[in-house]
Image: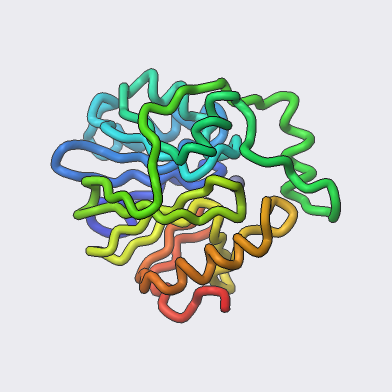
Amino acid sequence: MKIIENLFLVPGVVANPYILVDADGLTIIDTGLPRSERKILAYVSSLSRSACDVKRIILTHADLDHVGGLTALHKSTGGRTFASRIEADAIASGVPSRQIKASGFSVMRLMFSLLRPFMKAIPFQVDEILTDGQSLPVLGGLRVIETSGHTPGHISLFAPSIGVLFSGDSLVTDESGIHGSRSGLTWDDAKAREAERKQAALGARIVCPGHGPVIMDATGKFPL
Ligand SMILES: [Zn+2]
């Protein structure tokens, strides 16, 4: 699905993967559950591009629904891989970067606990560590925003020149708007609220979340 010029959402994947198009090639943000690489690569083909056009694969955090396709996608594309230090360490161990909280009921938590024995991530060594404030040469400058809370090393990516924020799971969306990280899956609630405030202050026009629809007119829709 085309969001704006040079920005696409791969449909039908749990945890939205995004494809960003630059003159030097493609950047993918997040890789879905295991086996999602097939849908991602099929979408790359639909853009009349090939796997070797994928230059970068960026992970917002180490949850399985974001890193599941990573190993296969890297193998097919040879794209350089990026994550924060904390999340890269978790990805290298093939585990999430935090435990899902034991208290409280959550459908997502139940789903994760049921699926986990069958769907382990393959341990993967990320090429490059991203830090807060760093800018990548993507979409006119893609800034790394530290948004810990959902997980300890969660990052978002912000492209100021086009006002697009990729929030991973630090913000989720639905028909009613933009919300913070779901509580049952949140490592630190106070930090998660801090990450919401930080992102609300960026002035993003478009929010591309890990889960839920892309919000095209995000101004004034952030959680307070
Ligand atoms: Zn997550």
